[in-house]
Length: 332
Image 1 (cartoon, rainbow, N blue to C red):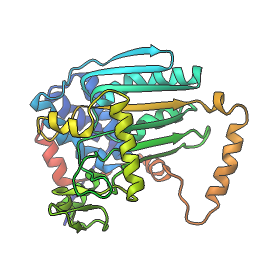
Image 2: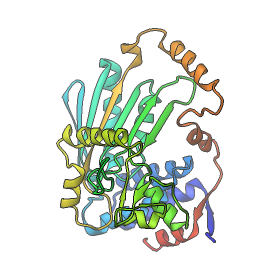
Image 3: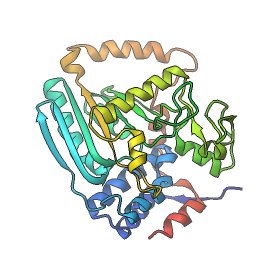
């Protein structure tokens, strides 16, 4: 039986910060990582919280990631912002780039932020929710290493290639989703394997190319895109936006150039901001809320992001896998 340990959010943040400092991060990089992973645990995004710490540490210890990197932000045009992460984990690069993106979007109406030289290993919703909290629409995507077979194939070429979208609802929690274009995120597959659970048929194939519900077997094989050809097309779009449009590595290039330490590869991220105030004009909020009222009136409907925001209201301790805590504590 899986055992759990209760930790407060403050204890979770302190543990992450201590481990990152002990493994070569400076205060800024450690704080950015502690913030993003603590928020994931707070909101119930367990596959992107403490579960990620060992992978971050592997990348620091191998020297693949610079825990003291200082990202540099530049405006190529008033609407095009670029952050060179200089080998950092993505959260610090986002922290310096998103405020510039938000300001440009509010002023111009549409703006784009490309991040390169980063190692993205976190949830994607914090980027888009940052924009939605400021009255802006956010779209973000990033690629990874090949784990997903394009529709019709049994060989991995795409990453799990998540895409996030957030829509502002002033005075209310925003609409916000963050989804892998794979049938299931690899982190969730790994957690299912750790906890001895099965996954739905259609999640992936085993090493011999056979459909499987065993997450351990799928982890040794390939994931499948959600929705067949439709999910495959979106996964391809993410590759083009996160790598083609940023001039960073495609998923297959990330694997070819990775040192195999088990930590996140170097890659790119694209974040796009849109201003409803400038694009839609006056009255957009009331117009959208009429639509949201119709949507919520349908039986069984849950607005994307509602569960996460509901979890956020609970400020109490969180139950964490006890073995995971022991593993992380040993990394100090």
